[in-house]
Image 1 (spheres, one colour):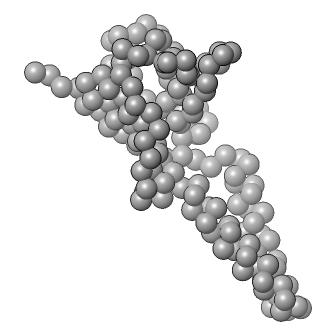
Image 2 (spheres, rainbow, N blue to C red; image 1 turned 120 degrees about the horizontal axis):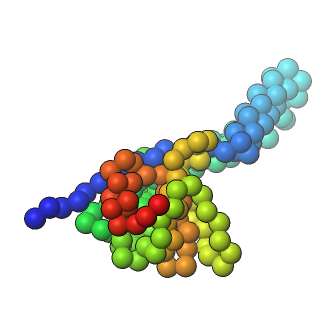
Length: 151
């Protein structure tokens, strides 16, 4: 019996908006700390609040997506801070209606993005159960999909 098993992870890259927020919060902490050190010690309170809030916010942004494809069953999980795993999608190859290269939009369908957010990264759009799934395939998964779907 020939089993087909693929497993791969895709680390998520921060968007421009998230990078800007991270830079602004880090800069504000530095400025508030310098202000508290040189001028008013009361500025230490907002510095600590902003630093702790930023710390937990930035930790929540450290995610990666794990894809598992076993004999036609696709499972997509989100791994947060390499500690916590949350299953986001589970389906079979028979539920996939269509596969396309790139990001496709279609009215009336929910879009679920499971990609790394990197520019020029290869993306497949899977049409399944009224949803559009954006996935970042590895070479074996892409060959497996070409075996069953034309794209």
